[in-house]
Image (tube, rainbow, N blue to C red):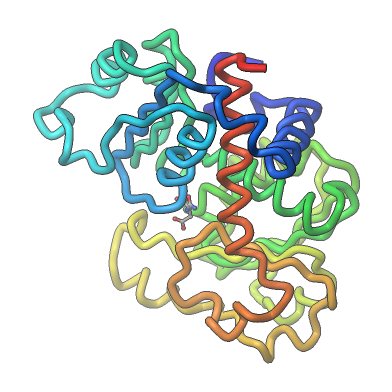
Length: 305
Ligand code: NCD
């Protein structure tokens, strides 16, 4: 295990399984963990919008007995005066024990990590990676399905800019007999580097389609995503593509009875609110799991037993 978590592939399968087991223990015995991080501080440095990720890191540290400092937008800090990520990180290191950073530029958390001795967690860097969302997704899948092997996982929507999908595919490449069905319009297909570096290199079974209806009957997990407006070069393309897939109850007619529907959230239009009451909808449970897995990760990176 490295000092930081920048890319999900820094964790071995065994380490991921240990984090999932630890999160399960925290769920069952929260009192045991309530003072594990007394006196410790997490700094949440968010240069890009967030609701779940930032608040779940903060709740995670608070529930471990620690406290929180940070900023939730670049305009709230000296970044607006032109300070570099490296200098901001070195400053924050004087105050905090661990950093969670989200940044619109790919690689920014890596730069921060290389400039400080305390652990840095990538809380999402541009269209690149989002390892703690993936840990959240893995905990959700493992609790819902009872396994992380032998699954057909459909990823639907913006597979080009959706960083959570890139990290999820990388992580699941560590498990046995996992097949991906990649459902997107032509313009939003998975990037070439994910195809060659993860899918092809790992010999992962996958198919690409633009039809959610055709893919549905075979899926064990359906991972819906939002079209990432902020990463488009022009608004017209976003408007043309944003409603390509909308999951409605009729589309679930041919789904497995035990399908698990995940979404990293925020949702815009891609899942109709009528789906929320379907027992297969897991996306709000997924938010809750995000806190527990981040508690497990904070303990691991801080070396707290
Ligand atoms: C995701 C993200 O920020 O990449 N959200 C999250 O962290 N839960 C997905 C998204 O913004 O669409």
